[in-house]
Image 1 (cartoon, helix red, strand yellow):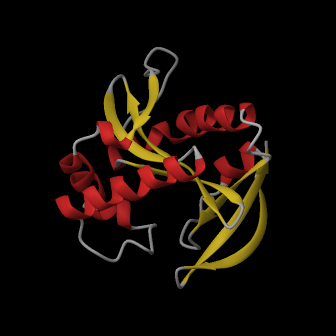
Image 2 (cartoon, rainbow, N blue to C red):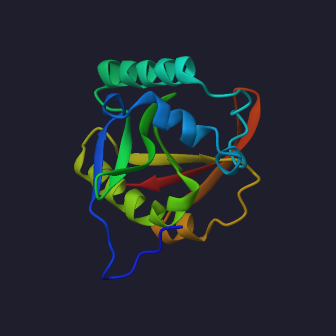
Length: 163
């Protein structure tokens, strides 16, 4: 697990998913610890799924001018996420490799700085499954619970953060 101290803070970069080998995504998304809080992850990832995923996220970039990135820490892939337009809301998602969970706050902070600088994003939403019990980091950011919502047949808790 990556633990950050003032001496070991890695350099965080956001790059397009097209810059990441599909097999790296397959390995990441095949870890059962990743699926633990992803109720929509009901299938097995393989190279074809990874390529379809990358293509779908690229379509968001072309359609909306924004989308999901691959996250790098000191040039090493640590996860993916970003902003996706969902029913008029810019939803932020973050899916890290289990050994990199400790980087979530730093990555979210950098992404939210991006959102605050982008006039298209007056607020950000977060959809979390009810299985997520540790919500302190979200509250520290200033996100407020909005409602329980259904997304693709699964229940999620929706939070909102003004940017």
